[in-house]
Image 1: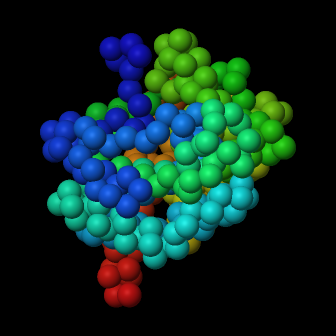
Image 2: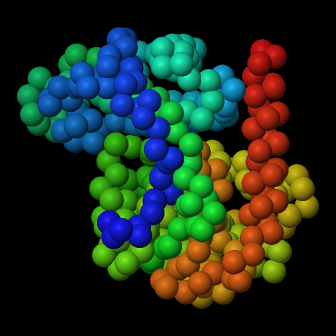
Image 3: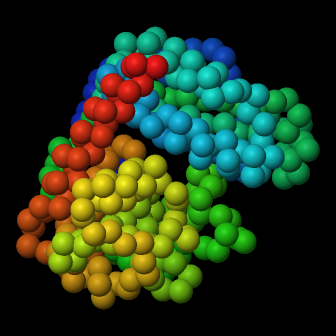
Length: 310
């Protein structure tokens, strides 16, 4: 990365993260001692699924939505986690509590097919049960990134067809997105704007992508991107608050000429885009992004209140 490079997952420095406990297969282990086998299928082959979740006032926001996606993905690849949703909620709560976390915390929950008997591909070689890891960190999104925004570059690496590897899998196999990010950095940008197989704007290497044109919010059809929880919440908020929103095909031409552009993701919520391929987006004013941020903040507050009443 160049010295000026930023990431949508940049966080404010927090020294407490040097001393956190991590959930590894039923045990809370100090960060320095948290390990999995080199035979683990996730390490060896990228054979696993993960979820990112955020903690607000003791509540894992939109937990049910995240579990819907996770369990659908696990079922699709015949990976039995050996855990219920309630089990996962309990282990996340236990990990957060052990680290003294109630808010401004972010979790990466990882479930792989587990340790293999031999270092080869066949899933039947994973004979020892799944590996379950939860990393929960103190994590406040970078104010600089949230203020100035991200620089994107369109890249040759595309989001592929579901018959290759369905982009809706939040899998450990992220090489496609890593390559895209490298291409963007080598072009002098922070992250990649990826197209679909037909050349339409799709998503970034890490987040879902939206533009605002003449008061309308546009995002991709969703055919080739991650079925993002935050993406759907933003679409729902637009529909509920009379903000025109469209899931449609559009090209770089429309992205370059947008009044605003922004990314959605569990970590940063709504992150503005400053430029695409060196072209400044809009005038720097972000009225729609600011309105959506306020609506999303209210939605999180309602979610926290609702979950606490359960």
